Length: 611
Image (cartoon, rainbow, N blue to C red):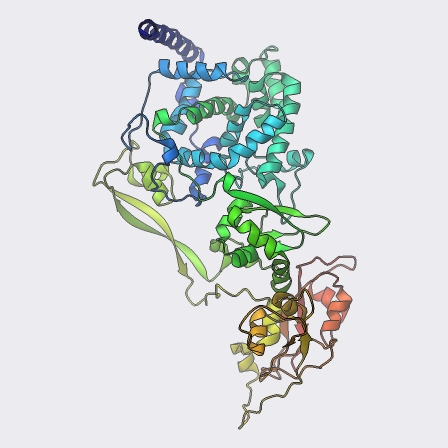
């Protein structure tokens, strides 16, 4: 042991001298200064910055996870730095254990500085996200007999943000372009994008890695080809005189690819030596082992799942980034798998029919799933300047996370030359706040009723209608008399199913029948039309009755309603539901071609004439 302690400093000193000479030779042979090789707004930095908008972490001020204790007793905001010899020695240890060549040089050092120093806050989030995505990525890599170190490439590509999208349209953890994704079986539609599915995208990436390795038999060239395409790598090989080493052809590659491989090596280092750099994960609210998948066999929305399973909508969106607009277009012949917290899987299975029935009642309402900035045109965002007073223990990264901005923005706003702040310092911060548009009426947040139900049960009392056709109130109000319609409860019936059948709501059923419980008894009779229809015309008693016509303003102008297409519907059957409506009219109102087919959940515009 004593002999080892004597020999180790000598070895480190020798390797340090040798490495220093290597770096000096590389810097002398480079035609441009090293600083010009690093571009702050390149795609790698953009991927990291994308996490600043991913608000899915337990707390930006959360304490270090107990699993990652500060074994080196660093102060909370201390940023360790090491001589090149230490980096070189650690990289050699990683290189011995990996089939991918992991070397240390000045290019790699620049990206170690990026991940371990300049972007510390974001790297802490990446460390947290790795507990969600690395288990499933490693499983796929092992299945395809690929180096497990390739998992770190997803950090370079997307910073483990499955919804990351580049300026050229590459999407997902592995940043597949549309046509490249199609080659490897990743489909993209208006509602679903397989490139955002962590499992499917990882499997496609593994297949792509296999194909590229069969071409080059060198992992660094595989990485270069993954980034810029085999065509650019082949041209660089030809221009270098046929050399098959990344570092020898680097100068002939596109600028982005020249940074790509050093960034990958740097991520390998930082993820393995995060504790040595006083970096600890900021954990997301849900991690991989706390979730499970369930099959969805009928159309459904994340909004309905959120409401019925009592889950935050952002949790479901975070776990299921595949569904672009929150709509799951599943059928029995084409089911989709969704990921849920384990504690709610049983609730989903026990209430699956009721969930599907809720969709049939409500249909697809895209307003639930559009970002709040776009969901309500009655609001806008304004930028306000505030002053933040630096407190003890804060650094520029923690302040940036607190206000959902970047450290570069804070430096620019305050004309800071360095990324250091001191206790008591006052910083100008610009934040966005949501304010109502003057004169606009905010839309109710809880308006989730199907639009055609609201239209058929709510009198038209808009200001415009009143001005055009003022209603003369009778001297004595006379309540309309409606013959009651009843539904006899059968085996397998439940409130949502019955409500969907008669195009009413569960709340209506509960109120009209004075129900105190949701439990139904076979043979029980439930009233399915309004016993107090002051605002409705009497409805025919037979089951083929037309949709009720609202009275409200009896001589009002035409009224627009929307019908939600259900399984088995045709244009003819929809026209039959409304008196005096023809198939050709429906086609004209909805700009539909003669051969166009209906889709379950589709909204059909119907214009009703005034009574």
